[in-house]
Amino acid sequence: MTTRPPVTDWATDWDHLERQWSENPYPIWDGLRKTCPVAHTERYMGAYLPTRYEDVKAVAHDTEHFSSRRVVLRETRPETILPAPPITSDPPHHKRAKQILLPRFTPDAIARLEPKTRAICDELIDGFVGKRRVDAAQAYSRHIPVRIIAFMLGVPESDSPRFIDWIHRILEVGITDQTAAMTAGREMVEYFAGHIERTAREGGDNLISDLLAVREDGQPLPPEHVNGTLRLLLIAGIDTTWSAIGSSLWHLAQHPEDRRRLVAEPRLMPLAIEEFLRAYAPVTMAREVVKETTLAGCPVKPGNMLLLSFPAANRDPAMFPNADKVIIDRKENRHAAFGLGIHRCVGSNLARMEMRIAVEAFLKRIPEFRLDPSQGVTWSEGTVRGPRRLPLLLG
Image: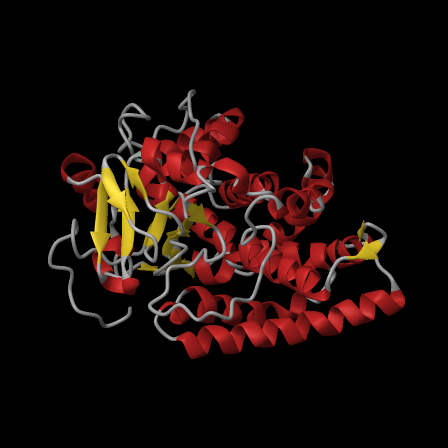
């Protein structure tokens, strides 16, 4: 964890790198909703934090006052920003950048990836089934999405350790270390430039070839657009789903009644996945305030950032009855785990599929497991929250 001055007051001095936030943020958000639903901090050169669903939704839909050009809350704000369309795009450029990606992420396209995903899960489980202990984050959940997105991009699955290192430096270390984030970003640019050149020369049937085939007014997409979109897909396709799978297993390790019910009633799995997404939503995005406005009666000033906490919105009791409880057969579940507004995640079908198959495969082969009390769970810090160490006792 990062060593930082402790938070003195969550309403006026919040910090999403605080250990309490990483390990158990729910009481923080509950307290703020009741006393200060739009908190502010002088850290990060000034930033706001809405915690109610209606306020998070309002910001997500307001592209006039809140820009997406910076989507990670960092301590410094260099003027040089590596674009990653469509997530860093504002209207009118956003719509077309997102439309280009949709064909690879339709339900039918994702269904064709199910056999490969299931084979990966079974292969990983083969490595520890029958053992007494396993770190499910390191041995299982992190490998599934990284291998699938590598396959979709047309890059070697064997480069997975490099991908995970880049994500760690950009989304965790890079929050407080600008050099680490920029260095990792440049390494990614160089990596994808090589694969773009190879695909242009040799052809292919993957996301790189898709982007290279696009024409706008008869012209190919600019190289920085292609490279930026590939970087986005790699980062967004790994850390988020890795975290969501790990959080689901973390929950099931502590709630044998839910685990055994899913084994006995597998038809409940889609509902359970939606509830895990709501209760343990991994992704928090940021927006840059570009025009003065108000939010829930609170003046919001340009030059500040805003942390758009979809996880906090998903725990709002005004939107979700018994919001603090995980109800695996919850029927009404309009959660915001995949975002709201124009930037709702293009990969939601992929994430759902990977989560469902990962949990199904684990329960089929290892129906009984629990947290290992001799070791602690370690959570990531920053933009994406999920278990990075998840020690389990099996059987």
